[in-house]
Image (tube, rainbow, N blue to C red; front, side, top):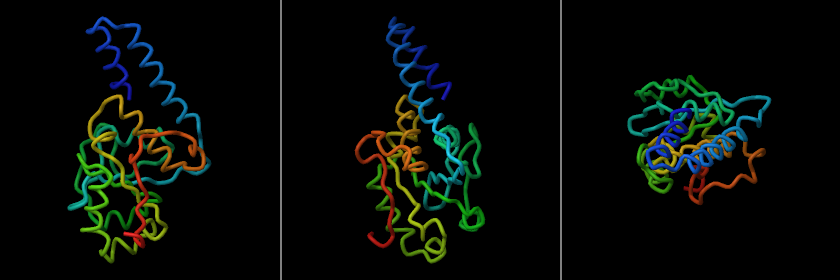
Length: 185
């Protein structure tokens, strides 16, 4: 997140709006700190999937976002590229939460793709995470696919997914995420 905050400062200098950029940077830092200060006793294992058919794990800045929000990121590391992921790996990982974030997709398109590809997959449906209704679709296009100040809201979305009881009053954009319930699709 350091790079995003630095880019706001740099843009402020270029536009000769140093004071405004400091205000924005400070506001973004406070939002991140608010999430970081909400510790939980048991951090859930979170698997962020950037593509569904075939599976790719989310890389780049997403692992850091998950960790800031209180989760344990599975497989990828901050700064690493996304990589192909097999169903066997997902099964062995036993994630507590799965977040589907196909690059460039909004929630509606992600749920549609899920319905077409995973809803009837027996191996997928056997996952404890799926049985426990801990699969979420997010608006990847707006909050996760491109590093920007909207990435900070992406961290807040992760916080609401990972720690819903602590962030029940945290406001995020409408249609930013949804829980996928196989029984209702």
